[in-house]
Amino acid sequence: DAATLAQLAGRAKRSAVGLYGFLHGGLIVEAGRLPHDAVAPLAAHVDLPEAWRFVLVCPQAGQGLSGENERSAFASLPAVPRALTDQLCRIALLDLVPAARSGDFAGFSEALYHFGHAAGQCFKSHQAGIYATDELAALVTRVRAAGVAGVGQSSWGPTLFTLHPSAGAAEQFVEQCRSWPDDDRYELTIAAPTRS
Image 1 (tube, helix red, strand yellow):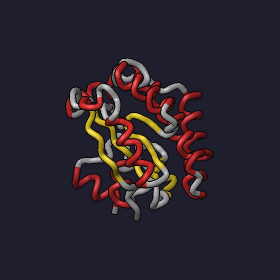
Image 2 (tube, one colour; image 1 turned 90 degrees about the vertical axis):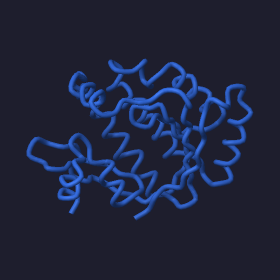
Image 3 (tube, one colour; image 1 turned 135 degrees about the horizontal axis):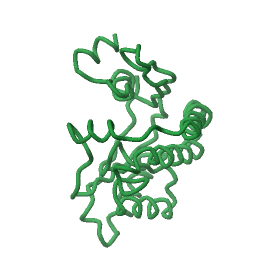
Image 4 (cartoon, helix red, strand yellow; image 1 turned 180 degrees about the horizontal axis):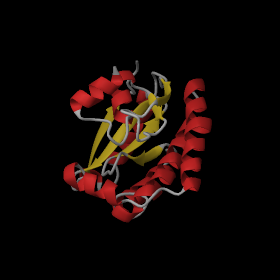
């Protein structure tokens, strides 16, 4: 089961999103880990529409926090304000999950951006702000100005993800990125959502 797998692999000590993503794919919402939980409970799982595609935009330079640096950062983060937790729960359960279930691309994309933007507030003390760097913040603004609503930072960055309604739209976005004056600074990867 999930708890045994996490224990054997030494995972899910803070979050079980990666564990459930590995097991099920799709959109994962976990309920948060309480002290008596071996693994945070799975609150919702929804397979995303097969046509949707993500484009990962990874700056060639820079690296997000990992290992001991990440553990230290998590240990020193201030408590998340209750109002922000409530906002994240509302977006996840009332916006993201219903939009995913109904295949509402526009609604899901906008909610995905707002969730990531709100979640970034939790990590401002160890980043340049909402995003890991000022470059990523500017890149998010550029992507949204290009008409791509669903954009966010993956974990501590520096990778951003963008969401597109089809493989063709993702390929068009990649071509658009290649026309940027600084396009050689980014590695671009098109990925399909995994499914259970």
